[in-house]
Image 1 (tube, helix red, strand yellow):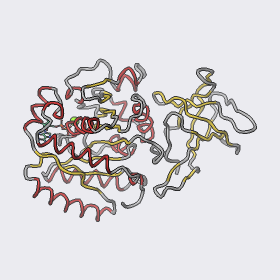
Image 2 (cartoon, rainbow, N blue to C red):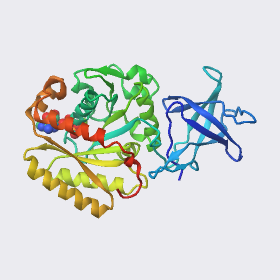
Image 3 (cartoon, rainbow, N blue to C red):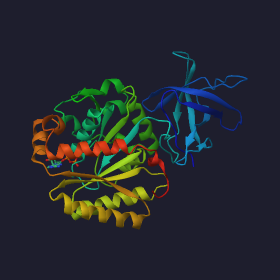
Image 4 (tube, protein in one colour):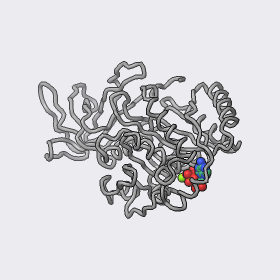
Length: 364
Ligand SMILES: Nc1ncnc2c1ncn2[C@@H]1O[C@H](COP(=O)(O)OP(=O)(O)O)[C@@H](O)[C@H]1O
Ligand SMILES: [Mg+2]
């Protein structure tokens, strides 16, 4: 299967003209919008300078969960144009019709985490914002991306009204640097568009590509936290499959649990899938509800042959509603309340769970 591809700047890629066998080495020098710029491909004997329209295969080193390397997955792309500056090279457009795809593991420092849910209103955006802040307060570099194009309100939760957003990026009107904002708490925010469907048509690999471009906005980004639309649409599924990890936010109400299960089932059916965490939000009786959720998760994991891990719970807290109304995130406004404490604990667990397991494609 054409596979996992690391689009980060400075990654070495191996280039082969389709139909030929010789391979050349090249380095990624820019990732912009949905294009990839690489240095002129060469090997010990010569360099090549393929014309626009030439079909190429790109190979990158893939790391399997057991740590072995694999160079065999070729990704199709086409030369868009040749460039001379800043370094002689090629602008390539990757072929979106292949069943990709995510970024390569171990070597990359960035963890991409989608916050999602089967049902709307479970607290995704509140969690995404405050988790990003909690990670930042623990010393991580965080980029927060609002990929909920329908009802996205992440900027609103920070009390800002950005002039440009993700839609401008996707439609080529603005660059990543132009849309990213530095918000209180030291987080880089990429605001979502409102209601433009263009984002919804991206394949997993295009999402993966987009997310790495967004990660590059902040030097040394270590976490990209992605807020998503709720529900089980193909576009959300593609976005989730482009991420390393997914946090499924649920409340204890049966409809929310059932919808979460349906979404996990969809992920579990994929060949390459992200690690899935469950967060129980709005817990009123943490002990009882925590027990129920752990039991449900155990049963679901057995049924699906796919392990979901409970990351933890966030207690019901009036401070959350107040923070939403005032446009001051909970962790900045009400940092000692129960929900803020719980979210900080979730962030600590995420950081200490760093271990490369997220990439396993089998049962975990
Ligand atoms: N832990 C919590 N305690 C109390 N209220 C909460 C909590 N989490 C979320 N809420 C409430 O739920 C509302 C919806 O949250 P939001 O994050 O916007 O949901 P989603 O993004 O999933 O649609 C918030 O405005 C807030 O009033
Ligand atoms: Mg939301």
